[in-house]
Length: 285
Image 1 (tube, rainbow, N blue to C red):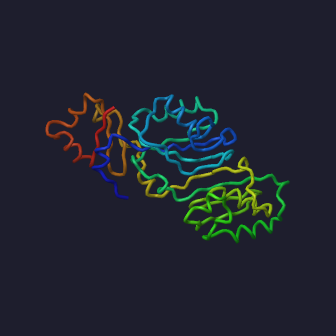
Image 2: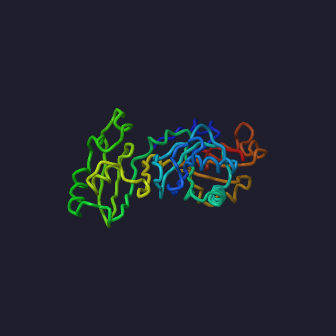
Image 3: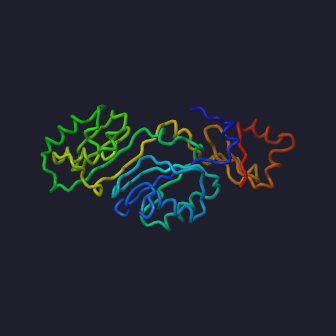
């Protein structure tokens, strides 16, 4: 992992990953649509109510169809927010009955977040009484349709219009459920595949039985997570309100009126600090 220290130093924003769960039955769609209840719309409404602002749009780990729930999806945005993330999470979850924040992770700003996603995992739980194929037939089809191939037969007209139809997907049938893992799914692919694997039909099964189980991010992104400094150094620097680490880079937060004193004349103080602790970015709260 290579971090552009100067670019981060000049930016007044950080990136925020919101790991969310939601009840898809309460939403008409995932993306914001005027006059419709949507996952992104609900998230945006409550974050605005909590006075959390961000630059540009909200990126997501994966879009979900209407009625599809998620145990874990990830929303990413860049913001100048420096407040308490635990308090933000608690207040959001109080106000939102159907979208819940599981955790919030700070990272670098202005990322192309979809490029940092390695894969997605889905679970399809169809009622047993509606399954028409035998266990042996389902398992055989799961083996046959696991791998890298043209999956356009398992998508809708939007998927067929995409230039790239090759996808890698692994699917297994365990305890009456289909488990999918793929590098990139096409529109309605999982629901159409589920129909074929369970009922020998190519008509997509209902979204209410589908759940986005997990977003798998690349290690490069995990290496960009910003963590609280666990070393007991803050007692020696009473003006530092918060101290975080991005790899071996220190990010320290001070009140505006304390910043110039902390840096010192001609940078003397901050240079001494860097000699002791390494590369350091100073931010105001």
